[in-house]
Amino acid sequence: MLRVLVLSLAFTAFTVQERLHGSGPLRLRYGVAAFGAVNPLQSIETLRSLGFDYAEPALSQTLALDPQALASARAKTAETGVHVETMNWFLPGTDIKLTGPDTDPAKIRAYVEKALALAESFGAKVIVFGSPGARTVPDGFPREKAWAQLKDFLQTCGDVIQSRGYGMVIGIEALRKPETNIVNSVAEALKLAREVNHPKIRIIVDFYHLTFEHEDPAVILDAGDMIVHLQIADPRERRFPTSDAGEPRYAAFFKNLRAIGYRGRISIEANSSDVETDARASLAFLKEMADKYGR
Image 1: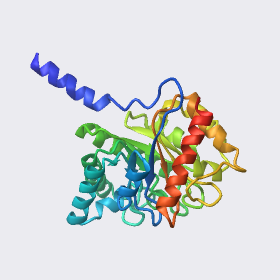
Image 2 (image 1 turned 120 degrees about the vertical axis):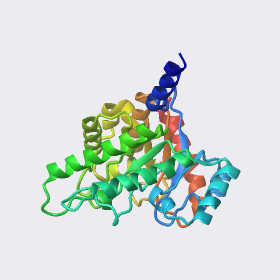
Image 3 (image 1 turned 180 degrees about the vertical axis):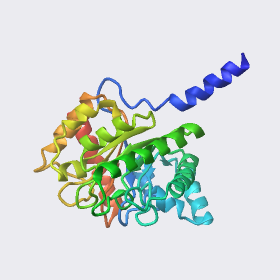
Image 4 (image 1 turned 45 degrees about the horizontal axis):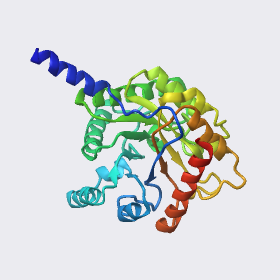
C-alpha cells in the first residue's frame, strides 16, 4: 500500500502543472524580465514597492553569478517576497550551439542539467526558450535537420524536468527574423511544441515579436492552453509599454487572452533607462488593458 502511495505521489509530481487557464475575467500576474540594462534582481526592491508580483531574471546570467552574488539574489527575493517565477535567456549565445554540424549533445545535456537545477532552486515555473544565438541555424545547414535538433533538445529538457520531478515547463518563444532564422512566429513555435509532444514543453507569446513579424494575434486562439507565459514591450521602440495609441493590436491581444481563459503571467521585457518611472507607468497601462478588454 505504501509503495502504491509513493508511486502515485511521484506520478503526480511529474504530471501536475499550474492551472493557467480558466473561466471569468482575465486575471494576470505582472513581472519584469531581464533585458539589456534591465536586471530585475537588482531592481527587486523597486518592483516590490510598485506592486509587481514576480521577477524574471536571465537564467544563463544567473548561472554565471559567483556564490556571493547568488546568495545575495536569493536573500533579496526572500526578503521582498518578489520571487523568481519565470526565467528568460535560457542558454548563452556563444558557448552552446543547438543547431548545425558542430553540436555537442553531452555538453548540451550537462548545461541543461545544471541550469534547470538552479532554476528549480529559485522555484521558477516557466523557462523561456528564446536563446537566438544558441538556436540560429548556420548558413548552408539543412533547415529540416536543424528543426530535428531543436526537437531533440526540447525532448532532453522535458526528460530532465520530468525525471527530476521539477515544477517547471519550457516555453518556446518565437523570435523576430533579425534575431534568429528559425521559429519566427507563434504558429511555428506551436508546431514545434506539438511535434515534440511532451507535457513539459509548451510555448510563450511575446507581443513585441508577434507585432514585429506582423502575425495576427488570432494565433492565440489556436494555441489555447499551450500558452504558459507572456512577454510584452512597446512594438514601436521596444520600451516599456505605456499607451495603446496608434497600436490596435493591444486590444486584440488582450481580448484573445480573455477568450482562451488565460490566467498566467505577463512580463515586461524591454529597454529602460529609468526602471522605476517606466515600470510604474507600464504596470498601470497593462492593468488598464486587462480590465478594459479582459471582461
